[in-house]
Length: 265
Image (spheres, rainbow, N blue to C red):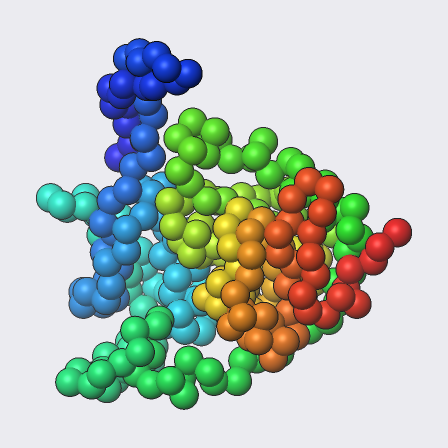
């Protein structure tokens, strides 16, 4: 399935209209199923879906480790795509029980949580091995657009990049959804046995609670966001030990938590 489509548009610019072709990012329903049971439908860019499903399964706590994911296949359906996964019986039993607990209850609507207490649960505190310079962060920011081919063509996708401590972008995934892009990146990195103590993650979006949470699940110590953080993101970063950097633009960035990991040379 194509990740973009050309459509005719009438462009108005400086008082004149003209017709041209525009590249528009694809957004399709992607169903994630486990052991032949549908779990969730996400709107996503139809690329690197195995990375997406792997990252989603890890960051949402459906599986504990990659070995819990036994099989995976991407299936074209009439109205979208399905990523069909087979997971271990212990993980599947836990997933079924979680869904059973949600039936008939009024939830808060965040990540499938059934109560406010679940949303504010204590996170696992990440390690403290990473030290990066402000210059390394700036280097990654300035090269981000060069690593986003879909964004360059369509102007509609977010990017999530894994960067070395020197600011070199080592891997990047794109999607119309910022959470999806990060899940794709995490899925790719975990399948390739990455070391979270050897780099930082850079996202082309704001830093929401979910972005900080997903980074923390896999032990990422530094999250750099192009746009603003939210109060809940800052609170969660403080509780989980994550260094949160926001408003990361060429020539500037703000460090909101654990500034000790950032060296200003």
